Image 1 (cartoon, rainbow, N blue to C red):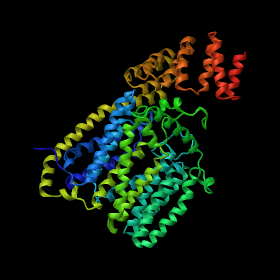
Image 2: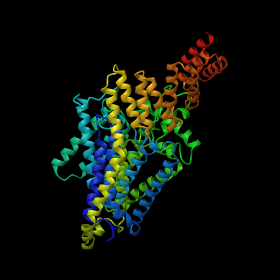
Image 3: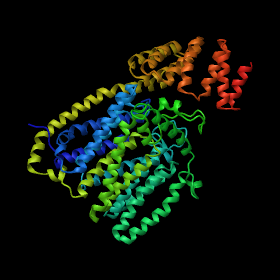
Image 4: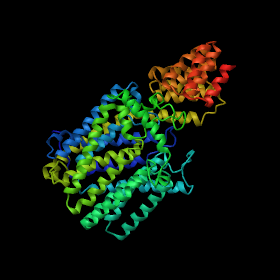
Length: 612
């Protein structure tokens, strides 16, 4: 009995459900007893659901070559090309742990992108024009659940005791900017459901939901979601007017262009609306983007390594930053993040996939009958809004998962819109296919179960390590130094291959003055990651604490290459040079500070040390 087969209608519905529940639970997933309560749980949920989707979709993937739809073939081909580029860039990354699992508190590594592309590929084969309303309902439901949580945070009834130092509207995404972006994008889905609802009660529900959605969006203080929603809503309303009357649509299009131009310019602090809409954080992003472009210039083919932007940021950042000494572990632009970390091998197929989805989505709007135009234009509007938001946002998993799902759904809908036969449920709802599905489905269930077990085995150590770190930080008294140091050392042995966990453990050990216990961790960090900033920094302060200034100087000099503009390190290095009697190097470094930052506080301190 062959496993290969295309989706039956029942199979397609199962796959759709796991994709959509995967998106919903990835966005909502948090676990407060982990050191990373936001992104690590999201990665685990995302990869688990993707494993199930892959197992259920494997028979359909095996017969893709027989697809009659060129859109499906091209879309799946570009997804495969992106996966190949991702694999190559992962293999070329110097620190494989980070490449696979992603950076600490980000988790945008190979596993996360693999999972999201599985969702895209499965969505291409399982969705059609009839089932796309499920996508809107799940996306809208996720947004409404976040809205409700945001409302609890607004009235001070948050059930979780987050330690929040700024805007409280972090919801389950960990940052008000992400909350803003998600609510703006999901608001487009709510708007579509409002416009297409037939019952008055449903219309009222969606209208109230949209109002609260936009209220929490406004309270987040971020304009990412505002612009995303405006872009998507405008496109939907223009198409809606066009369907009613072509002349109305033309007027709506012209009006949107006239109103939208000054709004778009205001984002970059240009025009009369700049004083109301411009946010100063765009200047910080310019620093992040300059660093990303510098990385791309030096590493155009493979990038600096999957999710390794943060480890290279200090080296490639501009000399005079908006906020002196600021640090970023992400380019704050999905496109620049992928290009700078994955190089052309990863970015080129990513860009081709985006262009293809955008092209066929726009074409589908024009080729579809009026009865489907609003539905297709709403998916396309969501897609375009996501593309716009991705210019200035981080590839947060709770957001990104819906971007990849939306791309797959748009390709699937374009197949139906152009009246092309495909391997979706419409064609395969036959007795032969259904009968075969009944026989094969248990095999796909077994495959899904096996893949889920593999995922759990792979990710449980990450969860247990994060839980242990949370416990060590919050439940062991610093006063019990001996037992605390022993617990840190034991956890370091269990985390021997995880440089990110070792960095956190070493930092905790140093903060509790357990220098001798920290040194083996630091040595292991530097073995795993030869250019680790924290590995060298921790080594320097550890040896300074032990009075071994000569060794500390070696690490400080390495830091000077990793962080060429860092004046704190320069000042400490001057102190170390003076202690060891190397006044010539101290003066040279003092001259460098004066050259870089004349009359600054660092220049004043360096001059005082050298004069003394």
